[in-house]
Amino acid sequence: MEGTFENTLQEHFIKAELIAEMSCTLQIVKRLKGMGFNVKQVLKIIELPESAVLRVFTGKEDIRKIAEDTVKQQIAENDGKIPGYRDFIKWVENALQYFEPEEDREELIPVEEPQRLTCEQWAQYTPYENKLELFDGQALADLRERENMIIALIYNIGLKHLVKILPSESKIILKELLDKQQL
Image (cartoon, rainbow, N blue to C red; front, side, top):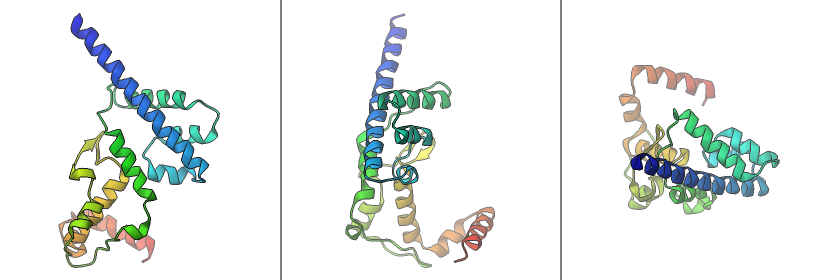
């Protein structure tokens, strides 16, 4: 009986922490809206359910209520289990990378042949503290981290090798995608 109570109490603490973090995140969304960002831009910067961002943008509901509903939705979509732990501070720092001046960041352009990475490039393009993680089936904390890591790795192995290691099905799909873009 005591173990059940402790488990229930622990679940409530975790839910409360997730709701608090979601409230903070939605406050950031509200600020971004005030700065002139649109829904699409916000969703590119911060990975959230589109419905939560839209509710913040309409401005008719309390942020806390949207946060509670969003956390409940995430738990329901996770078969009633509380989603795994996420380092909220790290996640916010990653989102804030979108506001770094571009001139402070060297753009990596993968070419046919492999290119060496400098320590500075590696630090800029790899996850915070070089920690790899899996969160709810997603590698790394957010889309920005995944994109950066992929670019760094492709830069380092070269496009020629990337194409070589792709399965045949993926090569066909990649060719179709490139043909659609008409480079």
